Image 1: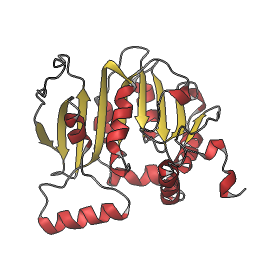
Image 2: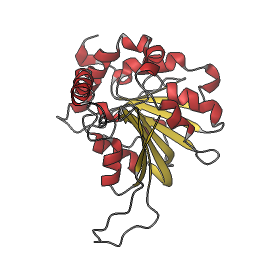
Image 3: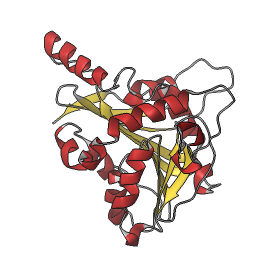
Length: 264
């Protein structure tokens, strides 16, 4: 099959679960960015996906710390944006029984691994969709009308071409009392100059650009954010929620945010 005949299942708009479904991409005519990003990620992970879960603990600290801090109401729902192999959702499933777990990713290659690793006992609770973040309502491929109680970005925002759009899309699908949880590379602020320059260059070679961080974007959108820095700025864990008191219409005041702190 030629590239022009790429199936709906292989486009960044299809839903994949233990029972595979298909969908369509909600992208205006002429807007090819999701397909460019999908091709880039598929090329990057076509072979890496087979060893991704085994090798990433060395490079991606803070993921388990992030997951331990997620709490949702009984019978709630969680969305992971950029879910990759589905590792985080599989980790959350036993800790949060009864919770619906959904993941979207632009890479069909990663989602092939996610579906292959999904245990049969979880096929009714975890669902995946091939979807470009921020381009449409992330609830749509899962046939949901209710918002999500928590939305997770795990080492994903720093690879997204328009991370503010991704966060705005997440906020549009988030419950009024919901939370956003982010773990990603930091700015290496406390590293010596040459080491920081080398680290950022190495990440850029893998299409990773830490700035602006998810925490910075969330603050700019008026959310209350707590932030932890790991290994002197190598990574950061951020959690955000909407502020209960909304400024009056026309007010330029920004809500106070919690200071960041260094850990581990």
